[in-house]
Length: 275
Image (cartoon, rainbow, N blue to C red; front, side, top):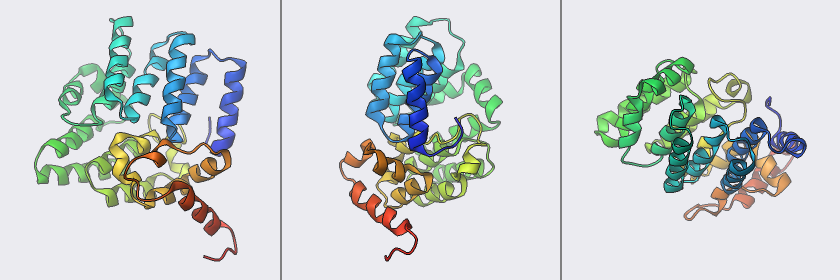
């Protein structure tokens, strides 16, 4: 779907699912819509349901471990990956390994993530879509497990990659957050998440922001600037108009109330409003 307001986007997706609930593409799109709206539990439920009634296509199957990993439920995500590999032991779909890589980059020790980066099939998949991507992710992981200098190099590498438009920006923004450089994460978001830019990014369609709700981006979400970013992306309007608030609003340690901040942002956006 093109970049349209989130509420309208959901209406279109649900209309399609009502007509053909077993359609693989419709389920795939709706699962990633839910993730991108921060509704992780709903995305997981949709992913589990899709495993039951959607023709078990490989690329749709990968949605469930991606959703589980985004929510930080890594053991369940690994179980889903194992089930996929049991069902298709000879699969050549690089989406399997890409999904597993996403799972294994959410928390240390990153041993499996590094091993996957050495896999020729995954390397070809990443380099075909975004040349230089393997080097970027290797540097990012080294930033976690290496020295302070490695961390600085990782931040510089990530910033350069996203500013060149070589890698899907939300992945890089979340990775910067995971490295603890929240200011760089927000700078990258400010520069690269305008709607006209995200539609041109490699690999993923418009309005696909799910890495911003991942385990990697938890510290970014705890910063009050996150709600301002969400407003610019159209998410605050969606949350307020539908009542479907993102799961992170209930995260322990969140230093603000989502609904209160959202109401203030909405009021400030009204022309002529006093603030």
